[in-house]
Picture 1 (tube, one colour):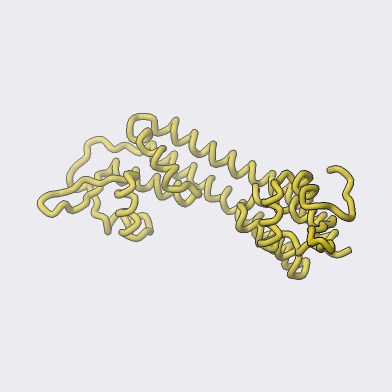
Picture 2 (picture 1 turned 180 degrees about the vertical axis):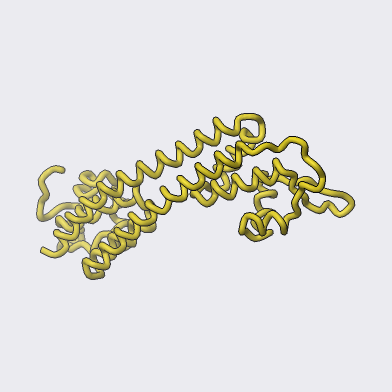
Length: 238
């Protein structure tokens, strides 16, 4: 990073942090940057703490998302250092849980995908309440997945009662594992049709690899953010 100056204009902070002038003003408004000093003419004057804050937020936003990044950087200006570090520890712990959930999802989805579903008998079908109990979810969750086209059961007339055949129950189990691993409903809408049409192993493996790559990228970003946050903590206490 270029040498820091003791007095910078908003445009100087914006250029060094890779933001627009308006974005820097927004970060100050949101408390990510502390209030800037003002000249007699009302122009903002920024110091090292403002640039360090913008850089720390930029690094953290990649790793944790903007909402949590703002929370952590604001804490630098408002709370003791141990509390700030605790927030960073929590971000690392969340990524660790995501990795664990992904591993479990990969193992479970592979086992589920390999299960035979031939020679299906009517008695093998499950009701909404039976499948919900087996998965440990609410019946309303299964109805939501049905409405989104993720795990669609048969309708049994005359009351159109939902009944899940073994292959449909398997879809629900895969959706459950992928949701646990962090997949959003919109991502699963794109993935599940391919899984139903003979591309189960290939598409599922690709989706899980993409999820792992996302976690790895955010983990690396959090490592970089730790250095930026350390520099900010040092600047805030000088």
